[in-house]
Length: 274
Image 1 (cartoon, rainbow, N blue to C red):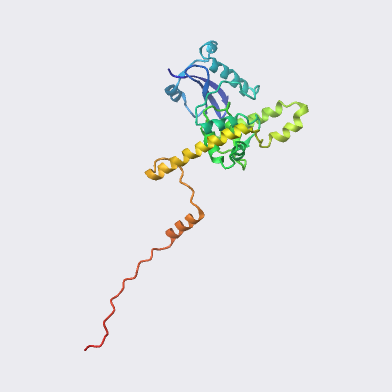
Image 2: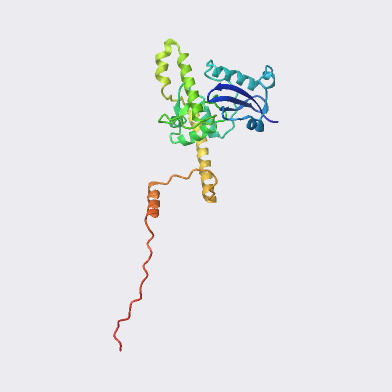
């Protein structure tokens, strides 16, 4: 049995449409994807899922989809800042940990890849956080668009036109958060909304994250080992960054000409004849 989906027209340039997918049991949301006006996703969507019409009886056919459509409409109308949906993203233990961390990034704020790694108890795991962030299958509800570079750069985004969509969502949330503040909390919220927020982390969550990252690191090491063994240039993996000494040695090999051994001429025999 194939999963089903609905396609919503958003019409907020550069976001044109949005596809919401449930599981075969119609109990949980497994994917939310964004598409720009330049993209024509119909053939792609039909090849993966069965498309349901947006009708009044959607709640009877697919209750999870119906609830998601309602809450996403409220989000884009500026009436919702958090979601209450049954989500079931498929991924590794480390990806699951990162995605849970993303759900704790508040509406109208951002965090960095490095800060999220610190909050998960792995300060050196910013690259691993970025990889998990890029594989998030449920956009908007799991707000990977709220993670930016430590220098304020947007970096990548998997929805629609990428960074352009990310910029739209962040600006939309920031503007809407400002317009919905109450006078009593305006000063406090204004101070924190423009800054990156540190996520609260419990001991249990940190331990789980450390365990999951350990497994991720092991899998990454095994994958790189297999790549080096196979010497397959088509794997798409990044080459390991050489150390300073390795780079200097490489440069010397590239720049210094090879020295050939001089051919030894035979020494003439000048001993006296007897």
